[in-house]
Structures are given as structure tokens and as C-alpha cells.
Image (cartoon, rainbow, N blue to C red; front, side, top):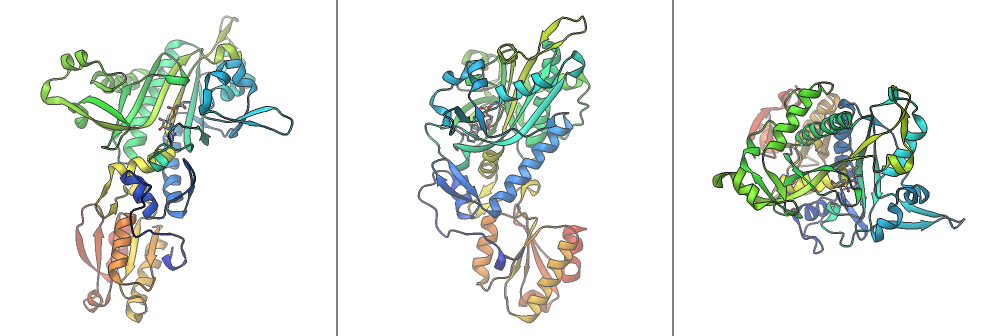
Length: 441
Ligand code: 5CA
């Protein structure tokens, strides 16, 4: 992509409305634009990151055996009346009437709808276990939308829903999602610590939140420093191996970690030696629930068991804040100059800076490298605008692409380009005809 033809409305100064660094940087880098309180348009740069995160989430859900569907954003109130949540959900639910005066709502979550879909589509115990998920926009009329996409009103969530015959089988479904979350977040360069959690309006018996650590996190957290030394996702796992999956869950739940709501000071002091106690703040990027028959029962979601008797199915739901993660990753990975994207979610792989646009040799060298890298499947953002070099460097650091290739008259005299790693700041000179091989070899 040539920057001269792109749409990336960069802001020079910090926007006043933004309180935390990710919100500031997302606005400055032209990733999002606020449309109403807690509601954002995703501009090209932001949209690319959102799609990359979504794809990682999708791949890891699929790997763990979940099956993708897509449910509508607008739901009928009927099912919510059956589950008893239509009144219970309160003001957070955006209620709408259609032209026939029927009660509708913009879905804040999908337990009711998916349970009804599943009920209508299954008959016998042979049809379970199943886990269905979708990646869809939600609306919650939050009391205090803030911090940009971190606490929005309209936000993108991945929500998965498992259906099992027994409590034990349901536990395995829960454990599979637990492990897949570790892997999902690790692929984005994040350590998301699982912590036992309150179940809130979703309800249920068992629940874990996954929190990444950041000073600006909304929750206060207490945990064992030993978490830092765990294997965060590089491990191989066979999701059908019940014991192996449970073992990973055991390892991660055996260490103390709790948000302030669940914190038990006495237990903490008993289980964690003083020098290993860490208090910090965290951002909740995922939340999983096991709620048994809470929705299956009122919605009649049951199958015929092996003995012919009807069995009400056991369920859980598993959420990931896809749009929140865009801000969360920035909170975890930035410096004074801007964003530092992990390669897996970067909007482009490489930024190509032409220090002297209009200079025939610089233009030719850039065109050649741009074509070479693109042919190798790399996404390159080529700054071909007529702007001073300094401004181009600042922009490239701000938007945080993992690699920069810098080409100007001085290097060209020696036949080299400069390659800079955004994260480490390391620079190296590479012969012009070796640049493509170096970055896409
Ligand atoms: N149905 C369940 C699980 S599928 C559910 O809705 N869980 S949740 O309420 O915990 O939300 C799941 C995830 O969505 C959260 O962990 C969080 O990362 C994200 N999320 C929740 N509310 C917001 C919000 N207002 N803005 C951005 N992301 C949010």
C-alpha cells in the first residue's frame, strides 16, 4: 500500500479526550474515530489489526474443536423472557421496538439464542458434545464507556457455547476453552493470567477471567510471580486427551491469582511467599463460564440419552473481547514514540520509507524493494509522500510496524538500505539487493 493513496488520518498532538495510552495512540495513529459515546468507526489501520486478531481467535477456536456460526445482532425479546433475563439485564440492554411494536434488543450476549438454535437442531446424545461460536458485534449500554475501545458500548466479541451430556463432559469442554485461551493470547504476544471470577449477569458455577497486566487496567489483581515462568502457549496439546487438557488447567489454576472482588488475603498470604507476591492492575480480555443447565432448562434444550430418557444439556459460554484486545495489546506493547505491534497482529509487516521522494534513484530503489517484498507476500506500507524524512520517521514509529526499511541518497551511494527493528531499535545496513531476502527470505 502506498501511503500517498491510503487513508490514515494521523494526529500530531495528543487528543484531549483520551485518558490512557492505547486510546491516545489509536486516535493519533488514525485507527479509529469516535461516532458516539463508546462507539467507534474502524479506519483502515485499525480495521486491519482487528481482522488479524479476529483471525487468530478463529484459528484457535477451530483448533480446539469449536464450530463457527453467525447470529444476528438484533434479537427478539421472546427468548430472553423465557430465560428470565429480559427484566434482569436492566439498563445495560439496548431495547428496541420494531414497526409491529414487538420488543427487540441489540444483543449484549447470545446464550438464549444459541441454546434455542441447538435445541432445534439436535435429538440424541450422539449429537453432543458440540461447541458453537461466532464473532459478532455486541451492544451494552455501559454506565461509563471509557478508554476508547477498551470499554465500548458497541464492541466485537467472540462468544462460544458448549453443550454436553454430563457435568464431567462439560468440564472437559470448559478446560479445552481454558487451554485454547492461553494459546490464543500467547499468539498475540500476551500473557493473560487466568483468575477465578464472579459470574455476574451470565451466571453459573465456575468461571475464570483472563487478564493481561497493565498499569491502566480496570481491575486490581493479586498474583504469584511464578506465573511469569510458565509455558504460555508453546506447548503442544491434544484437545481430545482429557487428562492432558486438565493437567494444563491444573497447572495454571494451582498458582494464586485473583481480582480484588475474589481476593482472599489470608489464602494469598498462606499460599504465596512474600517475595513472590505481586499486586498490579489487569485488563480482562477473556471470560469463561460453566453454568450447567441455567439456560438449557428454561429453554428446553435436551436430548435423548443412551437409555432413552431425556437429558437436559450442560452448558458453558466463553467470551473474548476482540475489539478490546486491540487496545489491550497497545497497553502491553508501546514506548514513548508510539505503538510496537507484535508481528502476528501488525497492520502491515514492513514500513518502507523513502527519505527523498522525487529523487530518481531513491524512487527506483524503493519501487524495486516494494515490488520484491510484495511478491513474497509481505504487506508493505510504502511512505512515498513528499514529506521531510523526520516526519516520516515519527509517523512510522507512531504506527509501530515491526520493521522499517529506510532508503535515502546517503545509503544509496554505498548501495545499502537501513533496516530498523521497531521493538529493539536495532539498525543494520543491508545491500539493496539483499533487503527482500533479509525480510522475506
Ligand atoms: N456470554 C459471555 C461469554 S461468551 C459473556 O458475555 N462474557 S463477558 O461479559 O465477560 O464478555 C466477554 C468479553 O468481552 C470480556 O472478557 C471482555 O473482554 C469483552 N467485553 C465485555 N464488555 C466489553 C465492553 N464494554 N467493551 C469492550 N469489550 C468488552
